[in-house]
Image (tube, rainbow, N blue to C red; front, side, top):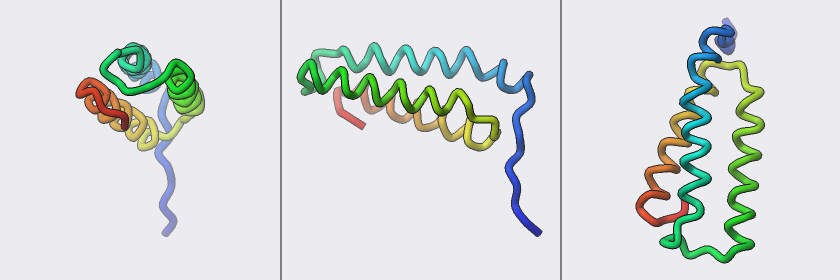
Length: 86
């Protein structure tokens, strides 16, 4: 028996959209914190990295992968709020 992915319905994707956008915006805001030991170029590189992760995540249709993206974003946000880099 093979293991398959459980695909998200349009309703599930629509339900998660506000949360994912909120996490994305919060992470970008936290990257602007003066508490982080980053140069301007490093800040821009980190923001580009976040954009790329969320861009590929926005195309995801697996329920489990969407949940993993949300969990990883919440974890990264908590670390950023402590003034550390994830």
